[in-house]
Length: 57
Image (cartoon, rainbow, N blue to C red; front, side, top):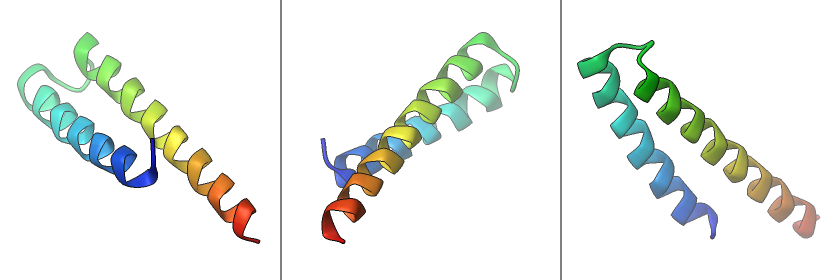
């Protein structure tokens, strides 16, 4: 998976999380689950970006 694909997944998960929070509240089980999933995607994105930068220079 490349950064562009991850970026799209991140934006989708963020939009989903916003909707869940609007409907169920910030502390709902589903909001927490989606927040954790978003965190995981962001970590993967950062790791991939760091590897890319390390390979360049």
